[in-house]
Length: 296
Image (tube, rainbow, N blue to C red):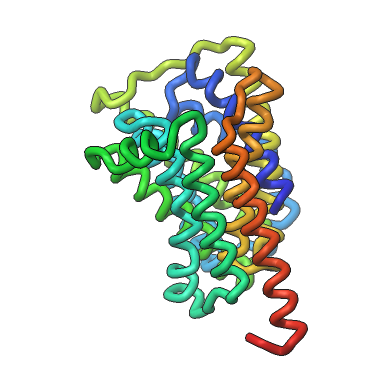
């Protein structure tokens, strides 16, 4: 899960450069289509594992994943990057509640403690470059459609983590991986057509070196490899713990941004990063100690 988060973190700078040359829905569609082409040989190798229920579960995962991407992208058009990052990160708080209702599985005390620490870390990290008062003023300002869409995005990402935990224990992970990549690609193309027809987002695709680099990296490393790893290994940990690990994505993104474009991290950003790492470590240590002592 840490490798998955690390690979996702590197996409921040790459995608930011790529979207100057391509419309967002078309970029997502091409990214997942290329990933779909790469995973097609596995379709023939594992076709005997396909059944109706597994295909449906994979398609549902693809729909949830696409909705997360779509609402985040559209929401960013109407809200600030700070608010988008903050509201997206609230997925870590939603996961434990969805875990209870969907998986009928209570989060551990260590996971709850980790969520509290990580939530504080998110506030500090999201306010990087601003004073706390400025950050609170921005987050607490007028709640607009972009903020609402980004909260919906956080819900879908949290739902994806919890549903994947449930589906991966019942179905072959190759079937789930293949179907969700195919489903996301198809839905992104359809959304691109709808967005263009509705004048929400005009079609743009200028094949520059930045765009080629962005498509290749996101398709191969941040979609093909990460979806395989995520689908295969998340079932070994709880959804809440997976959500905690994924909050490291903006920290990894900041590190890549520092080396790639010399983007500095403020003191508040460092405090936030420490709290996020601290939340993850606290979760692991507390659960280990409680399990060792026989406490549930």
